[in-house]
Length: 221
Image (cartoon, rainbow, N blue to C red):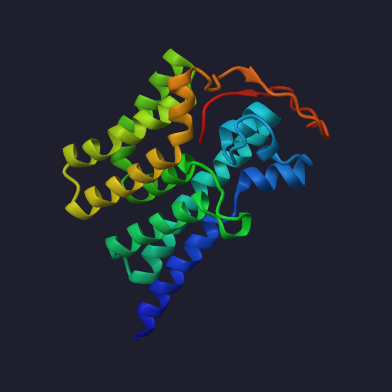
């Protein structure tokens, strides 16, 4: 095995464990003294943090989740000398780490923020249509989860329409499948009318978030 392949393998493994850092858990537990898995949708994502702990905490989580997706792509680029397949593989690994983290019993988030980071690092031109779909859906329905689901559906056709190589199209299908699979509980709640909407409040029976009063949210990230 050459030194480059060792570097590639190391980058993929590092990307998974980078994804394994759940900022929703870290921010909630260590900055606010709250385990967000006990509240709201019980999901380790930015939206549940928003509804449970407020906008500042959610912003920290979203920035962290998006950043680790972009960093994983960068790791793949550095380790491989720019090989698109390795960059994509590292992107998939970081999302897998976020969705199924070893440190938390393979129960993580929905991977939307981390997927956005991977998308911005690998296929930035393909980000506009899913982002617009997400924003319009949330604005019209107040369901963040529905916006995430529809953004995942729009993503692969966007990659195809923009003429990205087949490798990227295949990668977009994998990322979309990850997101849709992780949103199955949300789909069930949407069908039964029990899904959280943007603006619903969750009371936290624990340490109060200091100076962060916007404890609202909806849907999943």
